[in-house]
Image (tube, rainbow, N blue to C red; front, side, top):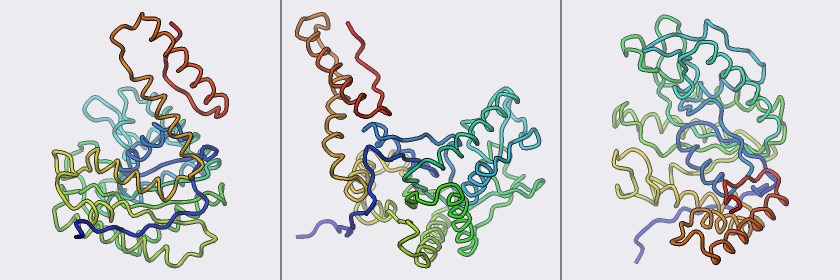
Length: 324
């Protein structure tokens, strides 16, 4: 008896290993996969702009980074005792205007450097719905709790999304012609837009991304990972959602991660991943008798394992244990 559909997945070429350099951008689901990669101590470079849901937001910031089009005071506004920028997530907002400008422009430099050196870039698209600021005419990445009346909601057309994708590709290729680009659609449901509106948005993203990828050749190193489809087809139950019924829960994230691992992580990395997991469990271990000779030996062995991995993989850093 079949109790679940299973999506056929093809193992990717140019897979990820511990020599790879990774960058993940886009919606909060990109952060979920980023955390899994970080837990296993892959060489993951952080996203300095925070969560970005909309294709135009990703396109605009990548273009800024490559051209080093620096932020200025005119890109900021003050609300609720903090300075904000419509182009980035509210996590970057700051009580000090100069501090925000400094962090934004430092992020541009980091992003350009990251783009240039990455072997794999994963971009997760969250929604095709955008909010246009009426006074400036700009499509914003985040509304920062500015009153809704100051925006006009609009749905990005398929042609406009394909244009975004083409511009994203062109921008990255100006400084990195070889990186593998992996695109996904976020499985997070945007029900604040409405039930039907959420489906329209996801449909626009899926159709436009599919159309665009179909026009590309294999030599362009563009790929699609079906995170959204796995959530919708293999995990078709609310028990795989958080209490808000919008976000995949830990079980769902772990399930999709295992599928991602099967497709994108090289088998030669599995043994190292197991060593990292063993060390992480050792670090988290809380003994009943921390001063005992047995525990001190355990800590010494653990430190040697950490030292060995860090010497073989210089990008790796573990939080402990300290000598004692």
